[in-house]
Length: 382
Image (cartoon, rainbow, N blue to C red):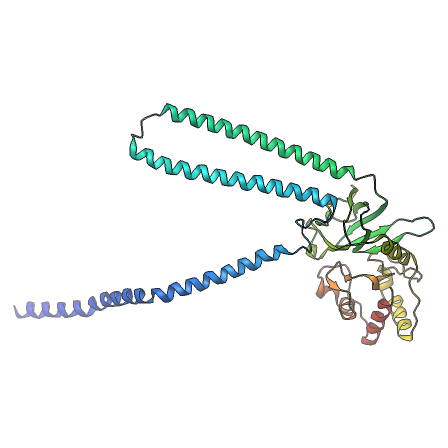
C-alpha cells in the first residue's frame, strides 16, 4: 500500500513536471503571439509597401518614350497604335462584361437556392439564358469581324505608302550589329555605315532588309512595325517621321547571346541637315593631321584591325565588321551598347569580350601608347 502511494505520488510529480510546463509554454506563446500581433501587422504592412514600391517602379519604366510603340511619331506607327488601343479597349470591355456576368450569376444563384428546390426547372429563366448566350455569340462574331476588317484596312493603308519613297536604303543584320548602305545618287558613291540611320523628316524612306547569318527582326516602334530579316528572303518596310528626333530601335527576334545589345538609332532631321550629312558621308576618311594620328593610323593598319574594318581612302578594306570611315560622327559604339567617347572606344578596342561577350571582334594586343594613338586617330574620322 505504501509502495502504491509512493508510486502515485511519483506519477503526479512527473505529470506536473513533464506535461504542465509544455502546456504552460503553449499558453504563454499564444499570449505572446497575441501581444505581438500589432508589430507583426506593421511588419507585413512595411513588406507590402516595399513590394508596392517595386511594382510601381517597374510599371513606371513603361512610361518612357525612348523606345515605345505608344509614342507614335510616324504614319505607320500611328495606324498600329490605333489598332493597339482598339484591341485593348475591346479586350478590357470583354473582361469587365464577363466579370459582371459571373458576379451576377453567383449572386442570383444563391438567392434562387434559398427560395426554391434545386430540382425545380424554370422555363422562363432557361429561355432568357438561351437568348443571352445567342446574343453574346452573335456579338462576339460581329466584334471579331470588325477587328479583322480594321486590321485589314490598317495593313492596306500601311502598304499604300510603299512605292512613294524618295530614298531607299539597305539594312543587313549581323550578329550583333546593323550594316546600313545608302546607294549611289548621281555622282556620289555608295555610303556604308553602321547602327545609325539618317532620314529626312516627312519623307517616306524605303528600307530593304536582309540577314547574312541568323534570323533578326528590325523594329523601330515609334516609326513603324516589326519586320523579320530571314537569310535568303529579302523584305522591306517604310519609315516616315513626323518631326525631328532620335528614335531607338531594337532587334526583336532572339538571335544569340548578345541579342539584347543589338540596337539601332534612327536620326530624323530636316532635308537640309540630311543632305549635309549624306554629302559628308560621301567623302573619304580625313587624312591624319598630327603625329599622334599618324601613329594611330599606322597601328590600325599594322594590326588585325584592317582585316575586318574598312576606312575609305586607306588600305583598310575589311568587310567582316562595321565600316569606320566616319565613326566619329556616330552617337554610339557596338550597336548602342556604349556611348561614343574616347574612354568607351579605348575600352572596346582593348577588351571587347568583357563588354559584349560572344562578339566576333577579338581583343587586339596593343601597347598603351598605341591604343591611345588608335583612339585619337579614330576620333578624328568625322
